[in-house]
Image 1: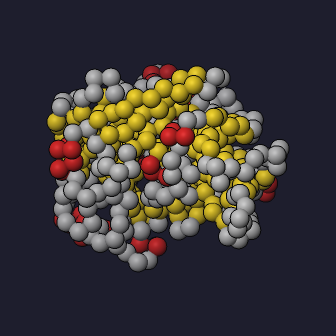
Image 2: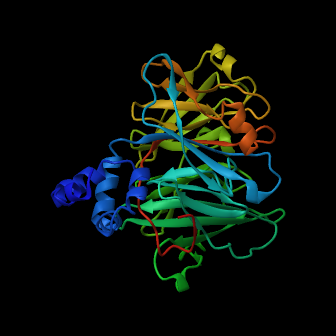
Length: 408
């Protein structure tokens, strides 16, 4: 298209066209003209783009290469697809969207990789990091203050939809012999004056009873949830709730089986409600329980046991499996937590529909299944952790006032 033709396109139509383009294209089109750059950086345009993007979420798979000894040689690979397939057994072609140097995917309790409003929380060396794969911006959070040793530290990100505000929540659990664990709660507002950008202790948490956080975190409608045991000796199960906007912490009582250690129970959103998927620790995912918090005020839970034929797992050998989320069709996703490091093997994920009890297998084509790709990026030895987000919404939001940034 000639420059004269571009200039004669009505402004409103130009904006409408731009909002429907992929985020990756918009990042390139900022160089077309000052007008286009100003449009793409305009907050109203950013909001409109996100609103449209939320109607067409993408399925993304991210993993880091695990063979290079040097942290500087590590990379985060992000693949995506616009759809997941709907047949009982199908395949979906994924494309490599971007690679970001130095970042890694973590599946541990301290810094699990999660997707939230277009941003992905991951790790840079030992630092908690947030990145936007669409803009390639990387935000490295400040180092946590020293606590009493020995301690266990974990960090997560939350989002307040009312004030359009991201915050990071850090837990520092100090373990004292013959006593219950004490948890220090720190919060970091990811916006504002850089000079005042630091971790601060949440007010009013001194009277919170001792507890031990034991599950991954999930943010739903402005609240970060995670499972815990309190007190440690009796191991009463609770769900800890951190309201991102008010920064208040409350507890929800739960049946004991709702909360188990780390990946034995995974919290997620199910049809707008908090849910916990609890696997049978003595089996290979032939059964798991779906607990749903039906009434948060009455703290009432429902339970449904799901059964999966053992023959389903023939294509995944000895890989550990996990539940990365639920798609828009209400299907629970099961996927390997790491890539096959030593030989080429197809990457399969599984969808279990709770209501129909049907399960389907989908092969993700293009996920490091090329020998040249693996050789080039060092995927062949060591553990390559995998992160999956079935409903990732692209955003072109760029946080110019966040703490420490990398990328372009």
